[in-house]
Structures are given as C-alpha cells and as structure tokens.
Image 1: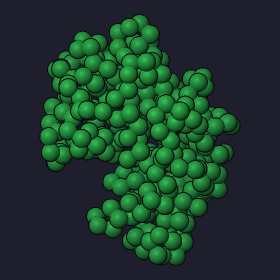
Image 2: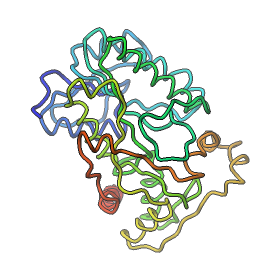
Image 3: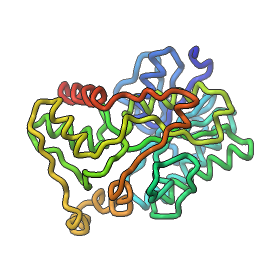
Image 4: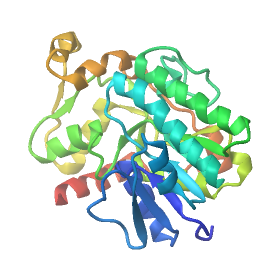
Length: 314
C-alpha cells in the first residue's frame, strides 16, 4: 500500500504504539503520536500532539484532520480504573472520529471473552465476568454500536499477552529474558504448565497496519493477531535460557500465597480475577485474520532472539 494521504493518529506510545509508529513512519506515512507526555524521541517524520484522552475537547483537537485513529492507550492495571476510565476514553475517541470522518482501529486484548475452555474466536459472546473483562466488554459494545449506527467505521485487532523488545509489561520479556540475562531465575507470577498464546509486539503492529490499509468492509468486526504455536510458559522461558546460554531456572509464584501477597501489591491483587488466563490452556484462533491478510507470525525462537538482543544491549 502507498503511504496514507491523511495522518494516522496513534493514541498512546507504549510498546504497541512505539512499534506501530515505527512501522508506519518507515514506509513514509504521516504519523501523529497523541498522548499527555511528549515522547523523548520519535521516528523521523512522526509528529506529536499533546492530548488528554479523558477530556473530550482535548481529544477532538489532537485528532483533527486524521484519516485513521488507532487506540493503543494503556491504562493502569486496576479494576477501578478500567471501569471508570475506559468508557470515557472510548467515547471521546469515537466522538472525535465521528467529527472528522476518521476510521477507528482499536489495539485490543482478549479480556472481553472471559473464562473459556475452547480456543478463542472473534464471534464468542461478550462476558459479564470480573471487573476488567467486563469493562473491556463494555467498550467493545461502544465501538460496535458506533459502527452499526454509521457514526464511525470501527474495528478491533486483538492480541494475547505481549512479548518482544522494549515491552516492559511482558512476563516473557522482563520477568523472563531480562532476569535471565542478569543471572537470575526467571519469575513466573502464575502457573507455567498450560499452553498459552503469546503475541510478538511487532506482529501486533503489522496486524494493525493491515487493518489501517484494509477497505471499509473489513471494519465493523474484530480480528485476532496470528501468533506462533502456543507453548507452556515453562517451555518459553526454558527456550529463552537456552538461547541466552544460561541454566534453566524458573521461580513460580505459589498460588496459595497470592491472597497474602495481594495485601502488599496491587498488581498481584489484580491478578485474581484473571486466573482463567493461566489455569487452563489459553489458545487463540486467528484463522479469520489469516484468511483475509497473512498468517506467518514470527517464530518464537526468532522473537526471543530479538528480545534477548534488545535487553542485552539495554
């Protein structure tokens, strides 16, 4: 595809936003990073617009003139924040898109399906389980309704747990690779023996670009990012240790201690309602996306090598 004639505005410049902006800028797109804080550095050609996505006026001003808006916003991992802030952010972004006729692409996760026993597919019903999954289900309804009403051409691209270079929220990247490089045991905050889909962040960025480039008939629906074959976290961390050249060592946080540790750590406390992601196989069916776009997800060993190289240099 040729570079977009109108700017692509990327709300949020975390791991996914950085990977997406780099990919778009590299092919010559006009890219506008939208968030509260001016990033320390941007790829050549990318610009910045200060914006508070919790404020409707600020959001509308920052997104003025954009052809596509990508929501790569990350919020603190707290149930109360998800419940209170996500609907506000989604409404503000959708309203800004409606005003400027911009298309909307949501860099989404898989929480809205809640506990499942089969591989996740895009047509599964939205859950009412748990605060964080329920909040993601609510904002899914918001973009679906905006699309169905003809207000905004909207879609979602959904990824599983992240890993890759420069991904500070990743168990594999920071609790695994980074600790192994430092001569420490990898730390697993949950059981490690069930197959669990991992999304390589550069693949997520590639999938988002596929929807940015896609015709309007790809909108109004959700798409799952292709992943390498799912392995148990233990095997992923063992492979990382082998690639680094250190002894395989994993410290698994005892689940019986979670209630006690939750008294001292908000992040640990927030894991309780998400146990369905690791107390059973957590698999993702991306055949729909593969049939429409591409299926060659980055092999796990290749993604881990890039992750190791990043943290070794850092």
